[in-house]
Length: 287
Image (cartoon, rainbow, N blue to C red; front, side, top):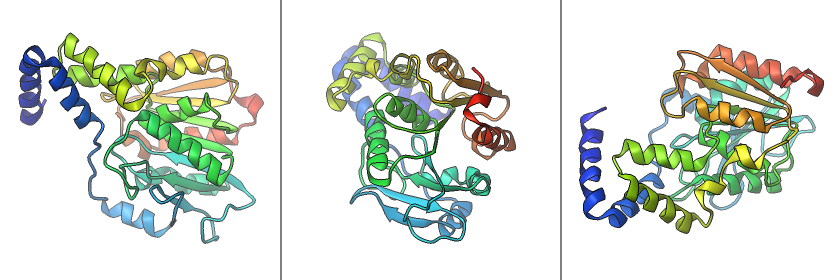
């Protein structure tokens, strides 16, 4: 734990006793204000190989496809990539070359308050609504791949009308309430402040975090699904994916080791497994 986080944690531990409501509100504002970072050099190359377009006035997206310019859907297969919290569309590019080789036209969204999209605040429900908006504007996607919060949002959106023939969930949470409770523990909130943190989140978002639980909302879902998680992931524990697996009738679980939460996106293990999964017929997917 670095010094800044340690100091922040100690402060919250003290303030949780003195002013739990105020501390919970301030912590929530911090949590829902994702930090933006400068794109890396390799992302500039990814950006130059794609075509930017807007889904609406606030949401930016980028598409990559073979030898076809512009965001007009091609007659081939369409695939949607969804990045995680404090990430952006171009950070998913490590998957793109193999997906293009499989014949997909690949679209990636910058979620609200991320990348080139507008906004200062975001949450899981906003992620879900943005996915449904993308489907409304761009049509059904033949496959959807999400990482981290993008995976969590994809699994939730699936229970609300997101349609796809194949779903890939990488390092994602099954429960948003679990995410919030882990965060509150990391930053030092006590039990009382944590409960207020959860309640304030429900008031702000309009949906209680306990209802944003894909393991409950997708019970019996037949969508062919590949769930991937690294056993050494310290940001989203592998228990989240294991908890989600039984909800899907037609799912496969793939476990990696030593890749953590972010490096997994550039791993040949992941790209090979996704390629294999997407090339399978529905009958080839095993539970």
